[in-house]
Image (tube, rainbow, N blue to C red):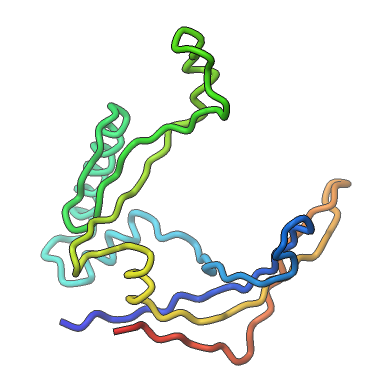
Length: 173
């Protein structure tokens, strides 16, 4: 079965950090649309030939989500076959503690994160380079920033200018 290639729209954004060696250079970032809600994902699953209705898919997905959160909060990873593994990781304060006795969970652990490790099977590989091969990339907008004053404070807001002749990079075989 052929996989339908979807287009990922790209914004071209300048590096505005004057201290950087690449100040003024442009870089691509994905043009993000509003995230698809759980309900939206479940509607897509139901619409793609699933024998289950959207409400059943959503109920099962909510149970899976709640279980994943529970398992991760117990310090255990969750492997989803064909997709990858979710693992809890810690963000520690820079510099650490001088000794185990001086270590304070409140002071030295800044946060608990969830890391996604994609599964490496050839057909289901989700590494960055394999994912790029599965996508069609298209320049869509050039982003500049405009300074406005809001509540007496200056703010930078993005201004999106459509790119008239977008180049399209088709997926690689």
